[in-house]
Length: 180
Ligand SMILES: NC(=O)c1ccc[n+]([C@@H]2O[C@H](COP(=O)([O-])OP(=O)(O)OC[C@H]3O[C@@H](n4cnc5c(N)ncnc54)[C@H](OP(=O)(O)O)[C@@H]3O)[C@@H](O)[C@H]2O)c1
Image 1 (spheres, rainbow, N blue to C red):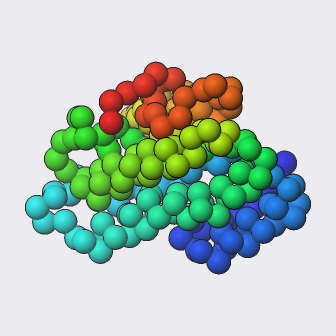
Image 2: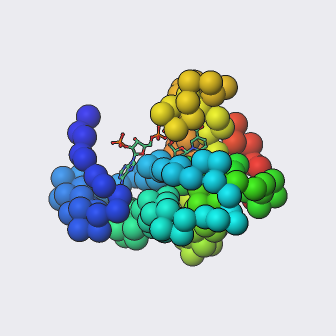
């Protein structure tokens, strides 16, 4: 296993990593955009700190977007790729509630990015999906969350290893499609 450190807000770092992956391996099969922050838990949309909203978008939306822009060309070269955008039910318009506005908006926007890229890449061999891991016992989810990390990761791994005729442009939890 080869491990590399990456800050997803560092454009040059991403470009360098893409170059290194190309030089060392000549291909990239799977991109899981998992890095994320929740900086405004419990805050209200009516008095949101817009700097926090920007910071959240920088990580949760632009981070994933930059990674896709940098790595999709490498996937296209091999006509194969699986992109998993780690989203959240908190970004689903269908069940949108109040509070935590920066995090919610960032995940709604990430879901839009999933739809856009899935549409643009349809037929290319690259499948792009959003996944909600559920409420998971991580630093973000806290020790009271209902799911273990293994349970939370299950649908991410499933989406990262879909067969060629698998879905694209979908939003999944527990390997099942959920409403946007
Ligand atoms: N936990 C939940 O209940 C839950 C529910 C729904 C969705 N999610 C989503 O699942 C994903 C993972 O969340 P988590 O629960 O594992 O959160 P977490 O415990 O807070 O971990 C966040 C991860 O993001 C990384 N990260 C933060 N800033 C970064 C940056 N600038 N560049 C690269 N990596 C960065 C962190 O790396 P370092 O450790 O190196 O800082 C850490 O590995 C997130 O997208 C989150 O929104 C989580």
